[in-house]
Length: 102
Image: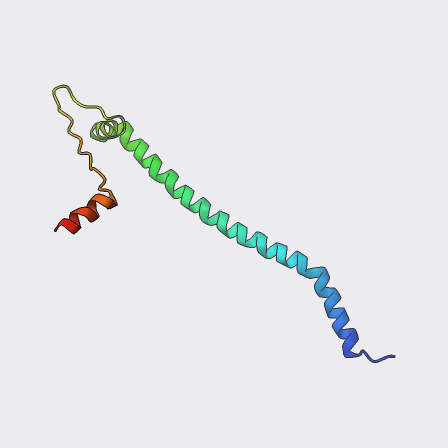
């Protein structure tokens, strides 16, 4: 019986690697994607629970409902006055010119 030479061992390892490596890399890629999706599912489940709690509060707590309507739709009670503060953006040029004058 012939003795296996290091060249034949190397060729056998190379052939085995060429056969199994694509499958292994695809498996690892799919495993990584599975982990990412599992994390995303957990985040979405948390969001669903928060929204369900908020829905329950809006259905049962009138003060929460009023607060949400005021915030989302901008509703006001009769006789209330709405004051909105609008901040002006200071441009770079006017800020620089005011600093130079000082």
